[in-house]
Each structure stands twice: as C-alpha cells, then as structure tokens.
Image (cartoon, rainbow, N blue to C red; front, side):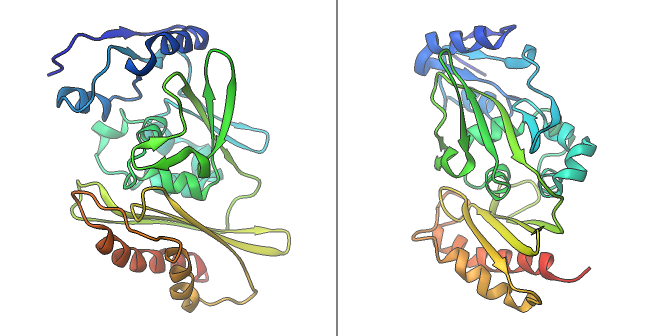
Length: 282
C-alpha cells in the first residue's frame, strides 16, 4: 500500500510529459510497466510526488530504421518476444527476453526501458544492451540527446538519465545478422534475480569475424570485451577469452544474493559456456 499522496499524470504528448518532469524535479518519476516502481513505493523504499505514465505517447513500438532497430521505451518483454523483427534481426535480444524470469504476469507488464533506467546490475537487460552497443534516446524540455550504452550505465541503480529527462527509445545498431548468439545466466532459483548474466555474439564484417561479450552482475556496470578472431579459432580458447574479460574487474559487486568474490568465481564458468556456445561449429 502506497502511504503518501501522489499526483498521477498521463500526458498526451512528449512536450507535455517533459514539461511535467521538469516542474516535478527530483520528486517526479516515470512509470514503465510498474513492476519495480510500484513495489518500491508500496514498501516505502521510494518516494514520489508526481508519477508520469507515458502510455499515451506511442512509445511501445518496435520498428526498423536506417542502420538498426528502434525499440520504444514502453515496449514490454512480451511484445519483444513476439516480434518477428527482434527474432530475425536481433537474435541476442530475443534470446535474452526469452530468459527473463517472471512468467506472463511480468512479461506483459515490465518494459525493457524501465528495467534499463532502474539499472539493477544483476538484471537481464543492461549487459545485453551493452553487448549490442545500444543507444538511449533521452528527451527533455530543451533538447534530445543520445547516450551510448557504455556511458548510460554509471553504477548500481544509477544511469546518466537526469530526473527531468524521459527515455523515449532504445536504438540497436544492426547492419548484419550475427552468425551465432548465446545468452546465459546463473540464478539461485527459477524465480530469483540473476547473480551473473552473459550476452555473447559472433558476427562477420567483411572478411573479419568479431566476438562481442558483455556480462552483468559481476560489477556495478556491465563489463564488456570485443575480439577480432583469427581463422580457425577453437572453442578451447573460451577459457582464455573469459579470463580476459574478467580481468577488467577490480572488485566484484555484492548484494543480498551473493558477494563480489563469489560472483567473480561464478562468472568464469558462465562466460566460458557462453563463448563456447558461439565458437562451436553448427
């Protein structure tokens, strides 16, 4: 039960929405599906005087544009999972969405945009979007800016989105369909948050083959590595590549699910499995 009065706004235009946000200042919140924000407000862990619901702003579309796919901030996991465009053009994102915990009740409510703005290090979206080199479109009263995923996630539950900015879309570059993808994670139980996530993609660009990988839950921000692979690289190289990406972490992230040392140790096997999955021949 939410114990304090809240003004609930449903603006009919982007201009109206960002004006309300600007006037609300630090007391304003934007609701995505509500699966996170409503729970926090009910538990007294979050406070807000004004809540904006962007349901009337048409931000739930998924469309192909020049150079990639544009995902509306209010696109639900269910919509992404059903999208043939996501399945065919962004198979890594499709694989990640298919692994989100919660069942239909959550999938039809929660949004990729809302999860990204919440920035739980152990959630599924951030590392996957980092691996895909996504870009976040933010709108305010005086400008629109685009932030790369590497700059969007600043730390645990922290992003570069200002309180007066509204996330409108997430752009995912997509010039060619990847050769193979792998998404895997480690959880205590089927219904729990992940402790470690791993998003891995093998792509061909001209005569070169590239492996991209991002991991979540290991540190406060997704960790990332990219390799240009020599012809004939074997799956046995997975252990070496996993060691390289984990070497970028100075200190593992700790929360109630696991401490940083455990996460770092567990991340090794998750990373190795994901890399092997994309390096193995069809």
